[in-house]
Image 1 (cartoon, rainbow, N blue to C red):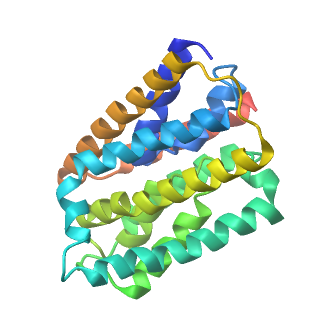
Image 2 (image 1 turned 180 degrees about the horizontal axis):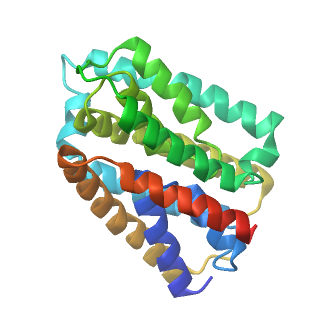
Length: 251
């Protein structure tokens, strides 16, 4: 992998992880266009770059998770993770073609629909986090293992449709990314160790890709948290709808 490709993929991974546009969908589309290649170890390192961006940009919220009195918030995150793991395993072993991106255009279309519906049909009254809406969030997050369906877009849509206000929904979605990114990296690392599929590592592209993922992740987190306080997410719905058309033509 060349240095420019590594930087581009890192930028896409970091931005797509937190903006509701689907990082996996973008990376797969770029791969189909001949940019980059399938490299599990490189993907793990990009995940670690985005993980670091959450820890840095949301350090106060992350620290609050481990303070006494926030046990319920930790339980909400755990409740949301349970259906996510279930859906991820079901898709991985029962419908692997879906996870491999066979229906990428449909995934982008689903993201666009979720964002549009959540913006137009979100209840006017504000609701708090609860076991019910965090469980629903976990179900939406589980479906988002399919390329093209944005994890952040799906989780925020679930919370918005439950009446949670945008800033709180976005913050919870980003906190929820921590166990998801860690779990994904551990799973992929185990798979890599078992299959012995580690390729020859080019250190410079790897480090620059991680740095790019970290920088774009930080920028995406700050941008989106500022955006949702003042504006709707509808532009992302139009963007992913256009991507659905583009990916359909490409694939």
